[in-house]
Length: 278
Image (tube, rainbow, N blue to C red; front, side, top):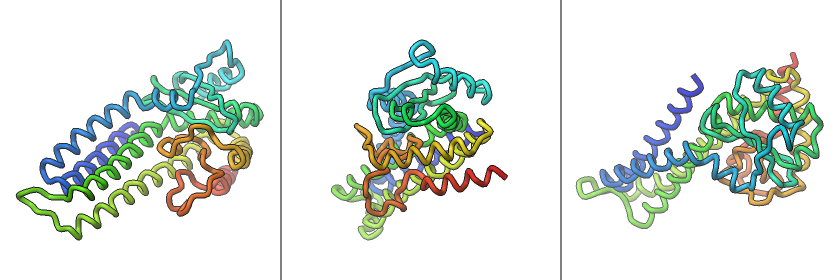
Protein backbone atom coordinates (compact mmCIF):
# COMPACT_ATOMS: atom_id res chain seq x y z
CA UNK A 1 0.00 0.00 0.00
CA UNK A 2 2.80 2.43 0.87
CA UNK A 3 4.57 1.65 -2.39
CA UNK A 4 1.33 2.37 -4.28
CA UNK A 5 1.00 5.73 -2.51
CA UNK A 6 4.57 6.56 -3.48
CA UNK A 7 4.01 5.86 -7.16
CA UNK A 8 0.65 7.67 -7.10
CA UNK A 9 2.33 10.81 -5.75
CA UNK A 10 5.09 10.54 -8.37
CA UNK A 11 2.49 10.30 -11.14
CA UNK A 12 0.42 13.16 -9.69
CA UNK A 13 3.36 15.53 -9.41
CA UNK A 14 4.55 14.56 -12.88
CA UNK A 15 1.11 15.31 -14.37
CA UNK A 16 1.07 18.66 -12.57
CA UNK A 17 4.44 19.46 -14.09
CA UNK A 18 3.31 18.44 -17.59
CA UNK A 19 0.09 20.48 -17.29
CA UNK A 20 2.07 23.53 -16.25
CA UNK A 21 4.43 22.97 -19.19
CA UNK A 22 1.40 22.95 -21.47
CA UNK A 23 0.11 26.19 -19.99
CA UNK A 24 3.44 27.88 -20.68
CA UNK A 25 4.37 26.37 -24.03
CA UNK A 26 1.23 24.75 -25.41
CA UNK A 27 1.54 21.27 -26.90
CA UNK A 28 5.26 21.71 -27.46
CA UNK A 29 5.74 22.78 -23.85
CA UNK A 30 3.75 19.79 -22.66
CA UNK A 31 5.97 17.39 -24.63
CA UNK A 32 9.14 19.06 -23.37
CA UNK A 33 7.81 18.99 -19.79
CA UNK A 34 6.98 15.28 -20.14
CA UNK A 35 10.49 14.46 -21.36
CA UNK A 36 12.07 16.52 -18.58
CA UNK A 37 9.82 14.93 -15.92
CA UNK A 38 10.56 11.43 -17.20
CA UNK A 39 14.29 12.09 -17.08
CA UNK A 40 14.15 13.64 -13.61
CA UNK A 41 12.03 10.82 -12.18
CA UNK A 42 14.39 8.24 -13.67
CA UNK A 43 17.40 10.00 -12.18
CA UNK A 44 15.70 10.55 -8.82
CA UNK A 45 14.65 6.90 -8.63
CA UNK A 46 18.02 5.36 -9.46
CA UNK A 47 20.71 7.87 -8.54
CA UNK A 48 19.51 10.43 -5.97
CA UNK A 49 20.68 8.27 -3.05
CA UNK A 50 24.24 8.03 -4.38
CA UNK A 51 24.32 11.76 -5.07
CA UNK A 52 23.22 12.83 -1.58
CA UNK A 53 25.62 10.41 0.14
CA UNK A 54 28.48 11.72 -1.99
CA UNK A 55 27.46 15.34 -1.33
CA UNK A 56 27.77 14.86 2.43
CA UNK A 57 31.01 12.84 2.15
CA UNK A 58 29.35 9.83 3.81
CA UNK A 59 31.75 7.00 4.68
CA UNK A 60 30.45 3.39 4.47
CA UNK A 61 30.82 1.36 7.65
CA UNK A 62 30.04 -2.20 8.75
CA UNK A 63 30.27 -4.48 11.79
CA UNK A 64 34.07 -4.26 11.75
CA UNK A 65 34.51 -0.49 12.07
CA UNK A 66 31.19 0.48 13.68
CA UNK A 67 30.13 -2.57 15.74
CA UNK A 68 27.86 -0.68 18.15
CA UNK A 69 25.92 1.07 15.40
CA UNK A 70 25.72 -2.12 13.35
CA UNK A 71 24.34 -4.06 16.32
CA UNK A 72 21.59 -1.47 16.91
CA UNK A 73 20.54 -1.45 13.25
CA UNK A 74 20.57 -5.26 13.06
CA UNK A 75 18.32 -5.51 16.11
CA UNK A 76 15.85 -2.97 14.74
CA UNK A 77 15.70 -4.36 11.19
CA UNK A 78 14.96 -7.82 12.57
CA UNK A 79 12.19 -6.32 14.66
CA UNK A 80 10.76 -4.33 11.72
CA UNK A 81 11.07 -7.12 9.15
CA UNK A 82 13.40 -5.07 6.94
CA UNK A 83 16.60 -6.07 5.17
CA UNK A 84 19.82 -4.58 6.51
CA UNK A 85 20.43 -1.14 4.94
CA UNK A 86 23.85 0.14 4.01
CA UNK A 87 25.33 2.17 6.88
CA UNK A 88 27.26 5.41 6.59
CA UNK A 89 28.88 7.90 8.95
CA UNK A 90 29.09 11.55 7.91
CA UNK A 91 32.21 13.39 9.19
CA UNK A 92 30.28 16.37 10.55
CA UNK A 93 29.86 17.62 14.10
CA UNK A 94 26.22 18.70 13.76
CA UNK A 95 24.21 15.80 15.27
CA UNK A 96 21.88 14.57 12.53
CA UNK A 97 20.81 11.57 10.45
CA UNK A 98 18.91 10.66 7.31
CA UNK A 99 17.77 7.67 5.26
CA UNK A 100 17.87 7.38 1.50
CA UNK A 101 17.36 4.79 -1.25
CA UNK A 102 14.57 3.83 -3.64
CA UNK A 103 13.39 0.63 -1.93
CA UNK A 104 14.09 -1.80 0.89
CA UNK A 105 16.92 -3.55 -0.94
CA UNK A 106 18.72 -0.33 -1.86
CA UNK A 107 18.25 1.66 1.34
CA UNK A 108 20.93 3.44 3.32
CA UNK A 109 21.05 5.08 6.74
CA UNK A 110 23.59 7.81 7.46
CA UNK A 111 24.39 9.37 10.82
CA UNK A 112 26.85 12.12 11.65
CA UNK A 113 29.79 11.80 13.99
CA UNK A 114 28.18 14.52 16.06
CA UNK A 115 25.08 12.39 16.64
CA UNK A 116 27.09 9.38 17.78
CA UNK A 117 29.12 11.57 20.15
CA UNK A 118 26.08 13.34 21.62
CA UNK A 119 23.38 10.69 22.12
CA UNK A 120 23.36 7.69 24.42
CA UNK A 121 22.67 4.20 23.06
CA UNK A 122 18.91 4.33 23.65
CA UNK A 123 18.61 7.69 21.89
CA UNK A 124 20.70 6.46 18.95
CA UNK A 125 18.40 3.44 18.69
CA UNK A 126 15.35 5.75 18.61
CA UNK A 127 16.88 7.88 15.84
CA UNK A 128 17.77 4.80 13.79
CA UNK A 129 14.21 3.50 14.30
CA UNK A 130 12.92 6.84 12.96
CA UNK A 131 15.04 6.44 9.83
CA UNK A 132 14.01 2.81 9.37
CA UNK A 133 10.40 3.91 9.61
CA UNK A 134 11.07 6.29 6.71
CA UNK A 135 12.47 3.35 4.75
CA UNK A 136 9.48 1.15 5.61
CA UNK A 137 7.06 3.77 4.24
CA UNK A 138 9.15 4.72 1.16
CA UNK A 139 9.44 8.28 2.44
CA UNK A 140 12.90 8.81 0.95
CA UNK A 141 11.64 8.38 -2.60
CA UNK A 142 8.54 10.49 -1.99
CA UNK A 143 10.61 13.36 -0.59
CA UNK A 144 13.15 13.19 -3.40
CA UNK A 145 10.55 13.23 -6.17
CA UNK A 146 8.55 16.00 -4.48
CA UNK A 147 11.66 18.17 -4.18
CA UNK A 148 12.69 17.42 -7.78
CA UNK A 149 9.31 18.32 -9.24
CA UNK A 150 8.99 21.44 -7.07
CA UNK A 151 12.36 22.65 -8.34
CA UNK A 152 11.41 21.84 -11.93
CA UNK A 153 8.15 23.79 -11.70
CA UNK A 154 10.10 26.80 -10.45
CA UNK A 155 12.44 26.39 -13.42
CA UNK A 156 9.49 26.30 -15.82
CA UNK A 157 8.03 29.41 -14.23
CA UNK A 158 11.29 31.29 -14.77
CA UNK A 159 11.36 30.07 -18.38
CA UNK A 160 7.80 31.29 -18.88
CA UNK A 161 8.63 34.72 -17.49
CA UNK A 162 11.20 35.23 -20.23
CA UNK A 163 9.52 33.50 -23.16
CA UNK A 164 5.81 33.91 -22.46
CA UNK A 165 3.23 31.15 -22.80
CA UNK A 166 0.74 29.48 -25.09
CA UNK A 167 1.25 28.47 -28.71
CA UNK A 168 -0.02 29.45 -32.17
CA UNK A 169 -3.34 27.70 -31.75
CA UNK A 170 -3.97 28.94 -28.21
CA UNK A 171 -2.46 32.30 -27.29
CA UNK A 172 -1.91 32.68 -23.57
CA UNK A 173 -3.80 35.15 -21.40
CA UNK A 174 -0.95 37.26 -19.95
CA UNK A 175 -2.75 37.85 -16.64
CA UNK A 176 -3.41 34.15 -16.18
CA UNK A 177 0.17 33.31 -17.12
CA UNK A 178 1.64 35.77 -14.63
CA UNK A 179 -0.64 34.40 -11.90
CA UNK A 180 0.35 30.82 -12.71
CA UNK A 181 4.05 31.67 -12.73
CA UNK A 182 3.70 33.06 -9.23
CA UNK A 183 1.23 30.55 -7.79
CA UNK A 184 2.53 27.26 -9.23
CA UNK A 185 6.05 27.33 -7.77
CA UNK A 186 4.61 28.46 -4.44
CA UNK A 187 2.02 25.68 -4.50
CA UNK A 188 4.61 23.06 -5.48
CA UNK A 189 6.90 24.14 -2.66
CA UNK A 190 4.08 24.06 -0.10
CA UNK A 191 3.11 20.56 -1.30
CA UNK A 192 6.71 19.45 -0.86
CA UNK A 193 6.93 20.89 2.64
CA UNK A 194 3.54 19.51 3.69
CA UNK A 195 4.50 16.02 2.52
CA UNK A 196 7.77 16.26 4.43
CA UNK A 197 6.18 17.48 7.68
CA UNK A 198 3.47 14.82 7.71
CA UNK A 199 6.02 12.08 7.03
CA UNK A 200 8.15 13.21 9.98
CA UNK A 201 5.22 12.72 12.35
CA UNK A 202 4.61 9.26 10.87
CA UNK A 203 8.26 8.28 11.22
CA UNK A 204 8.33 9.50 14.84
CA UNK A 205 5.32 7.33 15.64
CA UNK A 206 6.86 4.39 13.80
CA UNK A 207 10.07 4.77 15.80
CA UNK A 208 8.18 4.90 19.10
CA UNK A 209 6.33 1.70 18.26
CA UNK A 210 9.47 -0.02 16.95
CA UNK A 211 11.45 0.63 20.14
CA UNK A 212 8.53 0.61 22.56
CA UNK A 213 9.98 3.72 24.20
CA UNK A 214 8.67 7.10 22.94
CA UNK A 215 10.74 8.83 25.63
CA UNK A 216 13.98 7.73 23.94
CA UNK A 217 13.09 9.66 20.78
CA UNK A 218 11.76 12.61 22.79
CA UNK A 219 15.08 12.92 24.57
CA UNK A 220 17.05 12.45 21.36
CA UNK A 221 15.04 15.05 19.43
CA UNK A 222 15.45 17.62 22.21
CA UNK A 223 19.23 17.14 22.21
CA UNK A 224 19.49 17.19 18.42
CA UNK A 225 17.44 20.37 18.10
CA UNK A 226 19.37 22.15 20.84
CA UNK A 227 22.79 21.32 19.41
CA UNK A 228 21.76 21.93 15.78
CA UNK A 229 21.00 25.54 16.71
CA UNK A 230 24.62 26.12 17.65
CA UNK A 231 26.47 23.98 15.09
CA UNK A 232 26.11 24.51 11.34
CA UNK A 233 26.29 21.53 9.01
CA UNK A 234 28.97 21.76 6.35
CA UNK A 235 27.68 21.51 2.77
CA UNK A 236 24.05 21.72 3.95
CA UNK A 237 21.76 21.96 0.92
CA UNK A 238 18.16 23.31 1.00
CA UNK A 239 17.16 20.68 -1.59
CA UNK A 240 18.04 17.84 0.80
CA UNK A 241 17.18 19.49 4.14
CA UNK A 242 13.87 17.59 4.32
CA UNK A 243 15.73 14.26 4.47
CA UNK A 244 17.33 14.85 7.87
CA UNK A 245 15.70 14.02 11.20
CA UNK A 246 16.40 17.63 12.26
CA UNK A 247 16.55 20.44 9.72
CA UNK A 248 20.28 21.17 9.22
CA UNK A 249 19.36 24.85 8.93
CA UNK A 250 17.72 24.92 12.37
CA UNK A 251 20.05 27.64 13.59
CA UNK A 252 19.50 29.87 10.56
CA UNK A 253 17.02 32.73 10.58
CA UNK A 254 14.75 32.49 7.54
CA UNK A 255 11.79 34.71 6.81
CA UNK A 256 8.45 32.93 6.48
CA UNK A 257 10.13 30.05 8.34
CA UNK A 258 6.90 28.50 9.60
CA UNK A 259 5.24 28.45 6.17
CA UNK A 260 8.18 26.83 4.40
CA UNK A 261 9.39 24.65 7.27
CA UNK A 262 10.50 21.20 6.07
CA UNK A 263 9.97 19.72 9.55
CA UNK A 264 7.36 20.13 12.27
CA UNK A 265 8.69 22.02 15.27
CA UNK A 266 10.60 19.78 17.65
CA UNK A 267 8.21 20.68 20.45
CA UNK A 268 5.23 19.56 18.34
CA UNK A 269 6.98 16.28 17.67
CA UNK A 270 7.77 15.76 21.35
CA UNK A 271 4.13 16.53 22.24
CA UNK A 272 2.87 13.99 19.69
CA UNK A 273 5.17 11.36 21.12
CA UNK A 274 3.89 12.12 24.59
CA UNK A 275 0.41 11.11 23.44
CA UNK A 276 1.70 7.65 22.51
CA UNK A 277 2.50 6.91 26.15
CA UNK A 278 -1.17 6.60 27.05
